[in-house]
Amino acid sequence: MFHLQEFLKQQQAQDLYRTRKVCEGQQGPRQVCDNKQVLSFCSNDYLGLAAEPELAESMRKATEKYGVGSGAAHLVNGHSYAHHALEEELADFLGRERVLLFSTGYMANLGTVSALLGRNDSVIADKLVHASLIDAAKLSGAKLRRYQHCDITSLEQRLSKAGSGKRLLVTDGVFSMDGDIAPLNELVSASRGDASALLVDDAHGFGVIGKQGRGSAEHLGCHDDIDILVGTLGKAFGTFGAFVAGSDDLIETLVQKARSYIYTTALPSAVAEATRTSLRLVKQADDRREKLQVLIKRFRSGADQLGMTLPDSQTPIQPIVLGTAVQALSVSRQLASAGILVTAIRPPTVPEGSARLRITFSASHSTQDVDQLLTVLERCG
Ligand SMILES: *Cc1c(COP(=O)(O)O)cnc(C)c1O
Image (tube, rainbow, N blue to C red; front, side, top):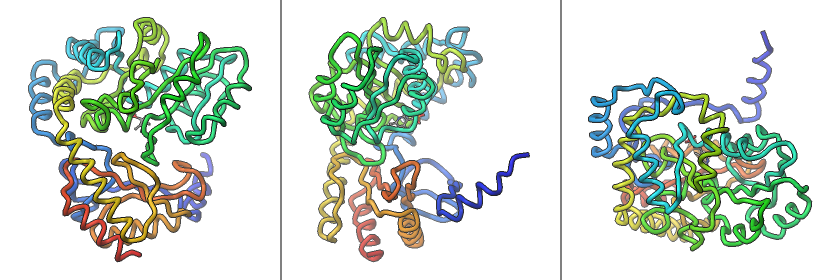
């Protein structure tokens, strides 16, 4: 067998060893994790829908109708009325010709980039894009060129060096570990031309910002200009899965070629049914989105009073960048001993030297929860 112990010991020595907590009950601010009651600020359940009774009820009913497993891939006989209806409703919501459901966001990115690009093409990616987009670029065989975070000058330098093949610009809408929003209007301009396209992965913006939760591009006024929109359903939508939205030709190409679509079992139909309910709730969730903004503002002004400088983020992702993995782990442990769960995010998830606490808020947090977090942060110095 391979000498795995060496690797594991090394991870431990560098404070990069990862462990899992075992949590009980539903997703929400108050959970029991590793047998301890905690107040948590680390999930992506931004609207508090993961434990919404209406979603659970629609999933239960759909399970009676469809059973549990979908039984096959979409192109065999696993594509149900529920999947089809969800795709049409998402397309309608986003003003796109078509939507294609994928089993996860990771698979949506892998399948899309590798279906569209090959060896002679280029992927031009923000330095801080999600790992799945980097893996997607590698899988496609295209040349991967990364520009400085949100830096259009750096992007244009990379573009000018790209060869004559196709160029796909890829970015997160809201950056998953930083919470800032990509300069999408500028990216739209930079990606004009027959051989270029822009893919926006809006895993953390979809449902959370923009009119009715349409996401980052809607928030910035360029929603109709994004060629390829990727959204995930396991975050603000509170269910599971992901989708790609775009033109009829794009979606048809993915149906023919995206291997992570073709060679995998379809999502359970009951998950798709629950997501249809979720879409209905997300559209009407202005109160939850406003509540989030109240919590974010309260946290930021409280942190400011404590003399902490936070990166510029208007989204529920509010990182406290600490530096080394040890520093991030140590503060995370101090918070844990005060009953507050915020996980330390370490390299390679974030660049070396920028280990952090990634604090996230959900509409199901209360202002008292935010105050409690601030009190404990103050005590931890
Ligand atoms: C979470 C995330 C994904 C992956 O989505 P899953 O459905 O969890 O696989 C993709 N892109 C970004 C930016 C994400 O934050």
